[in-house]
Image 1 (tube, rainbow over the protein chains, first blue to last red):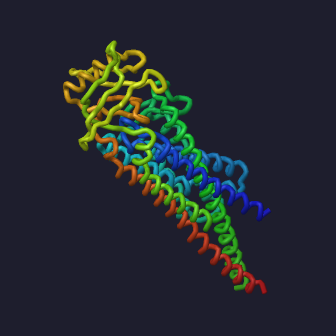
Image 2 (image 1 turned 90 degrees about the horizontal axis):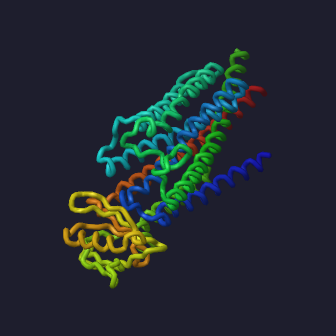
Image 3 (image 1 turned 90 degrees about the vertical axis):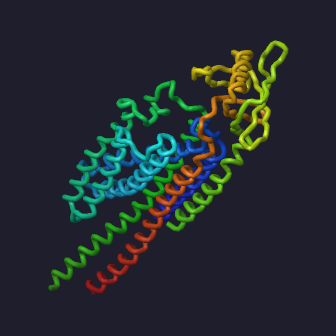
Length: 237
Length: 177
């Protein structure tokens, strides 16, 4: 069973590498340069996928948290925490890549508009969730309260998604997906590259998540053993 | 852990190599040229057939236009800034007139082309399309440094925790015995 698990993990890492290499080839070689923004438009193929992964992660954290509250199984709590940690990495990359893209296109690093502000809030939710878990003593109460924080935090996700529709500001409207308007749809090559890039970054996220989950399992064993030793020592005393 | 680190390192190197090939690749298949119109060629009925531009480095590039596959598209502004958007199949004579207007006013145009045939001809942006390569490089570097940093963090933490776990297991065994 353990052997099969390692094989599956290795297969996932290899699939990630292949998907990422293919996505990089598409985004830097295959897709033509945008005539309006020039080469800087290629940031789209990094910024949008990491934003997607960040939002998937927070929804995943919320779903795992709900499952924990229903089942009280610690596995769900570990999954939520691992997703949040990987999500915060992608959230930070989303914010920084957006800022670096904004500078040559909007001529400012940051604006206070809805899409950007709600994305920043998402990042702070992740950080708050992880800080709470880091400072609160381990146990049922920590798992329960962090699950509640995650569920409340997930409310931000649809707001980010609809922000460019509800408040039409500098951030471009949605170019793909069910609520993208026809006039904003991207060219086929751009759309295909974006799709491949989203798939590759999703693979990367799951690769990191699997690795983080293995670590979370070791951390849990460590915590249990530490508790057992201290309990034995106290009994002996 | 080691496998994912190596995989991501390979991906980083691939990204950097590919970033370096952006300009070369676009020159090979589809390229973008910016310059001032120097010559407009038409057939006997005044339909645009080809045009030439002089680029910033002083070289002249000649582009054929096509009415189908690809149908050359245009997005050009007139003297008062009104934008004319059309294509070769729809308005082949008007496109010649519009390009002559650009030529007379010494306005820069950007041409996206493939194998010497113009795919789109638009009013040149005041910015050079390759000018912001540094920003793209910065984003790629930040993304990979962030991900690699996280992978390294996971690896170090996993090693530390595994060692600590072994130590505790040893303690626990000696306590029980």
